[in-house]
Length: 287
Length: 323
Image (cartoon, rainbow over all chains, first blue to last red):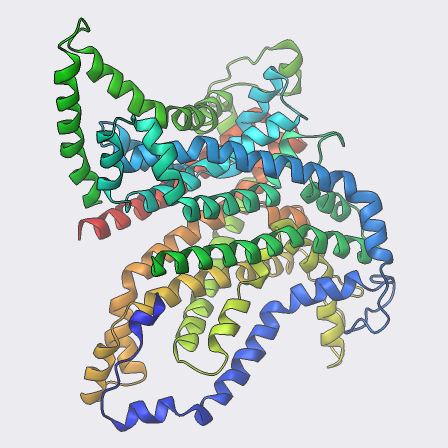
C-alpha cells in the first residue's frame, strides 16, 4: 500500500545522490542506536528474567549464566492467574465478535434514522476514561452479585472492546459491493442469511483483526480487574504483576519472568495473524 | 460512504417488489415494512444495549453518586443520603485539588509535546529510505507487545534506586544513584518519561503514514525552486500533514488523561501525591478510601475535561470528512 508513494524518478542530481546506498549507511547506524534505546526495556525484561539474583546485587548486562529459577517461581505463583486471563480474554473475544459483527454490518449497510448518531456515540465511548466506568460499574455489579466473577469481568472487558470492534469492521464492510448482497436477496435469502453466508466469509480478515485487538485489550486489561475483583478467585495475570509491585520488590527475577510470560500471547498472536492477513490479501489479489 | 447511500434505494426497491407479491395474500399491508425495520435494528440492538448499560448507565449513575453520600455502608444498608454539591465542595477545597490538576496538566502537556516531537523526528527520519529502514521501523512497535502493567513493572525495575539499570549505567560515569521514583520532585518527571516512551511508537506510526501521503512531486518541484531541507518542511511537509497532526495531538490528550495503569504501577500516585492525577485520584477516592461519592465527583471532572477534547477531535474529523 505504501508503494503508491514511491518516488517518480525525475532527472536531477539531488535524487541520484540521495539514492546511492553507500551514503545511507550512517542513517542505518543512527536508526539502530535509537531503536536500541527504545527497545532496551524489552531487552532488560528478558535479561533480568534469566538472572536469579536480580535486585539483590547488580544485574549483569547480559545473561551469561542464565537460570530458569525466575520462570519456575513465576509459574508456581501465577499459573492460576494465567488461566484466568486466558478464560477471560477468549470469552471476551467471543462475546465481542458476537455483538459487534452484526452491528458493524447493520451500520454499514442500512441507513436508518439514528444509526449515524449511534456511530457518533461509539466514537465518544472511545474517549471516556475507564476509571469513570469502573466507578459506577462497581455499584451495579455489587447489587447484581457480579463482583469477583468471571462473567462480570468478561462483560466489562467486552463492553470496552465492542465500540472499537464495530468501528473497525464497519469501515471494512462499507466497502463490500452492495450487488453481492442484493444477488442473495433476489435469490430469496433474508438479510440474516445474506449476512451469514456472504458478508461473514468476505469479512474474514477484518473479523480476525477485530478479534486480535479484542484479545489484546482484554489480556492487557488492568483497571477493570483491579476494581471489579478483590479475591484471588478471579485474578488475571495483570493483577498478578501489580501485586508484585505493591510491596518493596527484592527479587525481580520472578516479576520479570511473569512480565515476559504475560507478553508472549500478544507476540504469538500478532505473528500468526499477520501471516494470515498477508495470505488473505494475496489470495484476493490472485483471484 | 457513498456505497451506503447507493444501497438504500436499491434495497427498498427490492423490498417493494417483494411486498407486492406478499400483499396479494391475507397479510396486512404494513407488516412487512415494520418487520423489515425490526429485522434491521436486530443487527444493531445487542450493541446498543451494551453501550446503554456499560456507557450510558455509568455516566448517569456517576452524576447521581456525586450528589450522594455514597460510602461502603451504602452497600450494606442501601442508604445513600442526598448531599447536594457537598462532594464537589469537598473536592474543590481539598488541598489535593490544586496538586492533582497541576500534575494532570504537566503530565498531559509534557507527554504530548515530547511524544509528538520525537515521533515527528522519527517519522521524518524513517521517511528517507535507507538500508534496513523498514525493518527498524517495524521493530519500533515491539514495546506494544507488553501489557501496560508489564511495561510499568519493567520501568519500575529499570528506575530502581538501588540496583536499577539506569542508575547502574549512570554509575559508569560516576553519577551517584538518583532516587527516580522515590523523590517527590523527580517522580513526576520519571512517570512522564515512561509515558513518553509508551507514546512514541503510536506517534511515529501515524505521522509516518501522514508523511507517506504527501506527493513526492511536490518536493521535486520545490527543490527546483530551491526549497530543500528546513524550507521544504516549512512550506510543503507541515501544511500537508497539519490535519494528521491535529488528530494525533487531540487523541493523545484524550488518551493521556485516561492513564492510570502506568502511574499506579510505577508510584501508586506517590510519593506524597507528587504523581497523583485526576484519574488516579478518582481511583484512590473510590477504591482505596471507599468514598464513592467523592470519587464520582472527581470522575465527572475528568469526563468534562475529556469531553471538551473529544468534541474538538470530532469536529476536526468531521471537517475532514466534509472536505
